[in-house]
Amino acid sequence: MRESALLVGDSVGCDATQATQEGTFEMKRNPTRPAMSVTTGGKGVVSHVGARLLCDLADEVGLTGALSVAMAPTKKRRRGHDRGGVLVDLAVALADGAKTISDLRSLSNQPELFGMVASTSTAWRTLGAVDAAVLERINTARAQARKLAWEAGADPGFYVIDIDGTLVTSHSEKQQAAPTYKHGFGFYPLMAYLDATGEALAGMLRPGNAGSGTAADHITVLDAALAQLPVDPFAYEVIVRTDAAGCSHEFLDACGERNVRFVVGHNLTAALAAIVLGTPEKRWRPATTADGSDERDGAEVAEITDLVDTTGWPEGTRVIARREEPHPGAQLTFTDIDGRRYQILFTDLDDDAVFCEAAYRGRGRAECNIRDSKDTGLANLPSADFAINHAWLHLVLIAVDLLAWMRLLCLDGELAKAQPGRLRYTLLHAAGIIVRSGRRTTVRIAAGWPWADQLVAAFARLPNWSLTT
Image (tube, rainbow, N blue to C red; front, side, top):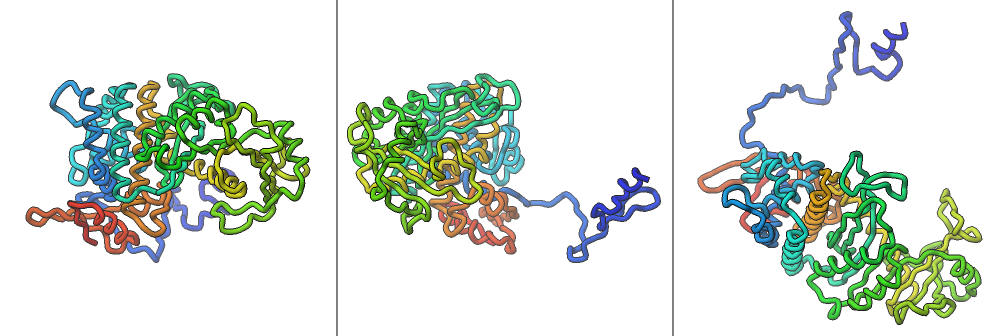
């Protein structure tokens, strides 16, 4: 009886099915859905139409051409695919949601929309040709494209670089994969993003046991990020933010040498905790919300620079403390004193202490950028070879940049702030029909698709394309 009850699904929510005498199931049709049959043979039907927008955007900002020049020395024969174009197609596939190199077929299987796209084996060979010298040329190409994108309207006007590390789990043996500090196994890349735009400026793939506070790595990533900016830190204010991992004498001295201002976290040591607890109440001022528009309930800020020995730190270093009441349900830690949570930050900004603390709190957006990068390929390193995985990381940087430029240059409204998953659902994966008339090719997107007009408008901001709904 037990077996028959499990088969029929008695009392486990199987109302939509009925068991026949033969033991098979007949589904009850939903009367609100139209009856239909499904066949193959559709002509001119294409999907992932919005991904073509990213291809055209890469062309328009000069990225495709610059990468072609960067990859040209790696090609040993004239025939075959342009390797710069292969990198662009791979980056577009990542932005479109690809998880593996073979997912490039979502583009290559639609030549009428994307042209001749490389095979999976060609993509592997292209990534295998990327060494340190090639990466340097690729980064130069990215910087050139960024300059053109900013000239087209992507320049935010203020420049805050967030540097942060993240763990990437490896489920198989890979070169330089190692145990992580959270008892996992994989890699610990260090990433840099531009806060105002979400652009991925730089990244360094590191073993999982790499130190979180390695100053040399922070300096390398900072230099790579600065090389991507079309602005000079000696002419425009550039600020770098990190958590306590970046609070080292060596890194902050390097910031000063590059004329980069800093706002970094600092561990709450016993000495600092004693100073904070002894800070007079009259020094504490209400903290503001992240946008500075209102006071933040239960949070206060105090400058304690004069109470701390800053000998050896860069000239002008200030020390700012924050205390707040934990939100309901929060678990206190041993560094939370007297029922409050405390944080310390070091900065050389000249602004009001409350503003500096709010500026530091904006660092939380780096976590969102890392999340989006992992959703755009960073979480899926494809190879056992470290060099190929490092090249893949740079493809992730390109994919994140293309999505950022699409938001900044081609979109408006809520989609201009949408995460990659929503952009894929609403725009990138949209389907259409290719219609040819004379020498004109048009892609018609279904008139009933809620975001058809936004996609048409996005394409309209790029020349040489015409879409109709």
